[in-house]
Length: 253
Image 1 (tube, helix red, strand yellow):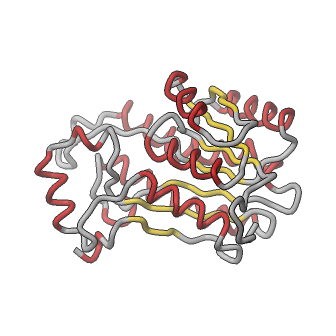
Image 2 (cartoon, rainbow, N blue to C red):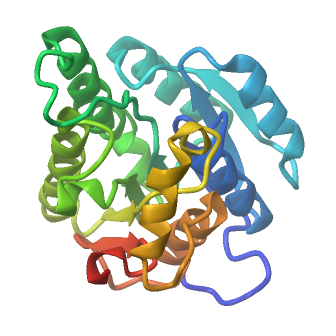
């Protein structure tokens, strides 16, 4: 999967979870441009997923409704991918949930929200890998890219549970890289604050402080993260079990 050409993923199949907007949508578009047939999954954002589907180059793409927190739905999605394509070469675990809560406001982060975040962001990522592993390990092996966050390293993000969930995801990446080798490579990409529809609703002063403390002087874009995902899949054939930052050098700020 390290061919250097215009369509390095021609003949390959990729699945992007949580692909109805933001990073997931940008990643789906770039993988399609690279020649892959792309499966988009969503929890309850069919309109957005179909809009992304219509924007993809190439053909043979599809949308499947399957929440990362719903194991039976993931197993059904894996069966559908097996029936439709007979293979899966790339899995991008992008589905996640969060809510902005100040870290010091412990009462606001109640048990239900805490469990929802871990169920989706950690268990959901694992359950997705578990469902699609038989397809990923066939035909010479595949690649899993987990979309993590700088919050895993800096413990500074939308809330305490979200930061913990992304730290768990990075640890999960290392464990799975060891467990699934040599057939499947597993990596994380870890964006800092990304310029998305969600973060544009944040306090402008907070966003500006982030920019001022980022050496490259700008927020990452969804396309920046998508480029890191594609590089992990196509250009790093001997790399597994690592976390690739996409943060503009933010920890140096």
